[in-house]
Each structure stands twice: as C-alpha cells, then as structure tokens.
Length: 400
Image 1: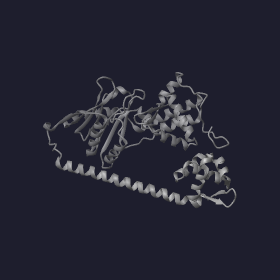
Image 2: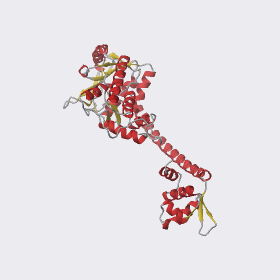
Image 3: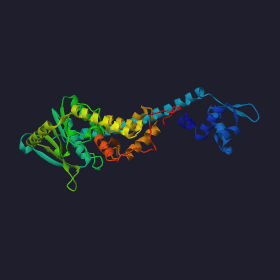
Image 4: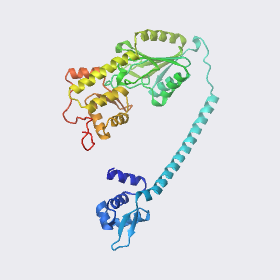
C-alpha cells in the first residue's frame, strides 16, 4: 500500500492530513522527537507540537519521559477500532436519516398518485372504430413512458421492429432501440407473466450493441440490409401501435412518434411484421457467423502487430456488447491489466476507431469486425509502435 493510500485511509477514519503524516512517520520510525516528526512528515515547525499533542490526545501516540520528549506510536490494532466504530455509527445514522426522508417523499408521491387515480378513473376503451385513438408524442421521455405503458399492459404479445443507429452518424439512441435501464425490468416482468416477444433488428447490432453473449427471450431475428427496415415500431396485443417517425429535416429518426390504439391499423402492421420476420435470420445463425468474424478480426489485428491487451479489449467488448467504461476496465483487470493501463488502452482504441464512445448514454461500443477488416485491408488501421500494451508482466509483477 502506498503512503498516499495510507494517508487517505487515516483521513477517512478521522485524522487530518498533518496528523496522518505524523502517525505514519512514527509507525515507520518507531520513536521520534518532535523535530524528527516534523522533518519526516514534512510538517511546518510551527505546527508540529500542536499536531503531536492532538495525536496524543486522540490516543495515536505516547510521550516518553525524556528531554527532549520523544513520541512513540500506538499500534493501529489498538487505536483504529474505536475510530472505525465512530465513523460507522455516523454513516449509519446519516443513512437512516436519508432513508426516513426518502420514505417521507415516497409517501407524499404515493398519496398524490392514489388521489389522482381515484378522482380521475380510466375512461373505458369500448369497442369498435369509434374508440380508435391516434396521438402524437414528442421527446424521448414521453415516447419511452408510452412504450413502457404498452408493455406493462401487454397480455399476450409484443412485436418489435427496430434498427441500431450508425456509430458515427450522431443519431440519437431513441427508446425504440434502447430502453432506459430503470424501465428494462418491465420487459422482463412481461416475459415472466407469459407475454410472447419477437424482436426484429439489423444483424450489425451484434456485436456492436448487444455482444456475442446475447440470448433469448425475446425471440430475435435479423436482417442484413438497412434498406429492408423502413420504419421502427412496437405492436402490442394486435391493438396498440407505437410508430417512430423520421425527422422531416433529416433522414434520421427523431424524438417524434405516433401512438395508435386500433385493431384495424394494428392488423396492417402485424401483416407487415410477419412478412419481415420470415425474411430474418435466427439469432443462433447470426451469432455463429459473428463469432467467426470477431475471431478473424482478432487474428488479423495480431498479425498486424497489435498487442495482446489491445486485442483482448476488443474481444471483451465484442463479447459483452455496449458497456460503460468502468465495466470494460473491470473486465480487463481480470486479465492482469491494471486499471491505469486499461484506461489508457481504452483511450487508445477509441482513437484508432476500434471502440466508439456514446457520450449521451456513457457507453462504449466496439467497431463491427467486418469494418475493422475492411479498414486494415485499405491501410487505414495500423498499430503504433508507441503506447502498445500487452498482458506480459515484468519481474516486479507490473504489466508492460
């Protein structure tokens, strides 16, 4: 453990910076005069006696009857326990106060929710064309809330056609493709109560977005060409449709959607979905070909001179799909690469366009292996001789 780490931990337990330095100096030297403590701990002479008096009062040091007096440290095992208990009690009391405050706010929100749902009961949907409804939704939050509401109300089936954005297009990751983490549980809740789900997307979302470890359910199929998917929509129980609209000012999809509750309209979308579904490739088939592509890309990266760690990071992100930087770095530490090197390696692969960063969702996504091999063939991707990382360790145990 470094001296900086030890000082930080002592400060966590209640000592200030000078007290922490002085205590470490005493532990390292066993016994020191005030002058020796000041010199060893880099404490101003005018502060040394105050610091040592505070350490003595707090039980971290003892004074010897000598002239000039010397100071000896109290062993950590005898003094730190009580300070740990003090800090633990403070944190627990703080957590209790926060929990009580949060519960109070939740009670207020719940009371408002119950009162409003009681005073304004749901309007009966009825049957027949006169009950058909169509409305326009704007902004991501409104679209996602409506989508989640459809899924929560689903009784038998949810059909989904979507497509991932191009990595470099700056197209927003709309809720038709990525549902917020706090709402993904409603998808799993629907699956657990027996709702059947079929999701149709582009094969290029593997491994870039979903990774090579994606499974079913939902049942998944894939199309190869972007032109085959001209719209993105959710169809729920053959009666509710949520349709994503293109931005009229650009070819990209925008945060605008149509929500429709109509069995007649839903039947049209269902027929279209079934035709597209028949064209799609099953997940297992796509995964097999994508694993082969990733293996081939990694082999070519090695042949071109990329280091083991660089290839390992590319493969790790290919396996997991879109992930935060912390998750990817943690995965690399399991491969004997320390955190600092992993962060630097991550930045290097981003600069080389082997990894892409989405700032809006703070996610890292791997470049598709077919594009990687195309870049290598065209001479656009080359390893640098400076900054290469490997998983080889030096005799000191550090990565080189």
